[in-house]
Amino acid sequence: MFEALEDAHLPLDSTGHLYLAYDSYCRYLWFSKNDQTQLKDHFSYNQASFPRADAGEFYEIFRGKPLELVKLDLARVDGDLGEENHEVFSIWHTAIRSFGYEQRHEEMFNLAQTLSIRVDRLGYEFEYHQWRQLNLDSSLSYFLLGDAYEKRGDFQNARAAFYEACRLRDIIIPVDNYDSARIAALRGLESTTQKLEGRSVANFLCKQLLNGSNE
Image (cartoon, rainbow, N blue to C red; front, side, top):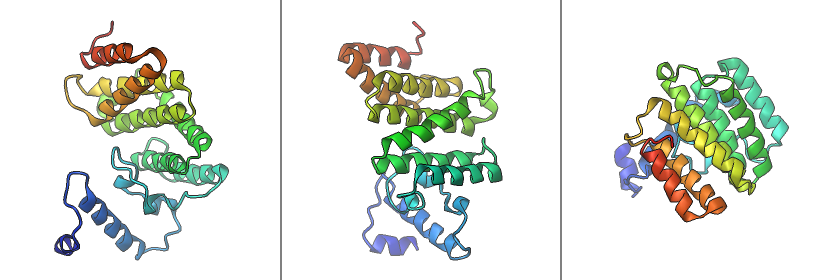
């Protein structure tokens, strides 16, 4: 299979074209064995796993659907798998990104806000060291909330959401370790702070966070 993909001149570069193609083919094989009617059958680690979230067939299940129907779909998945399940978070993230790709920013914000409230219920004392995947899922939920706020032009709340995404990763990832989720949140934080207070303040804030300073 990999030889065939290479013969088709699919780029084998760091952006993951081959990886995405392999994932799509595995999805095709999976769908050929079932009736494709269950939302959870569409789950893929690629469709919403940060940062590989290119638009494509992963989003077709939500495309064009009214918000209330999407919410009903997500409620059924919550009931089947549990609200703190990784696959559930990934499907929610897919729905949020799908609205974003369709430029449906109010619907995107609605879902992102709902999911961030779910994260908030875990509380500041939640032991994320024992639930490391949940920590990443929670941080990404706030990153998407920040993205939704920014698309609405609400830079103040976007900055707060990006900051929370950073804070959640800082709980389990030392600040001197590279972490793609934290870096993306910092970029969002820098962008929104620059819009609100200028480049120098944005640079200072991100430097303080990268150095682990609480000042």
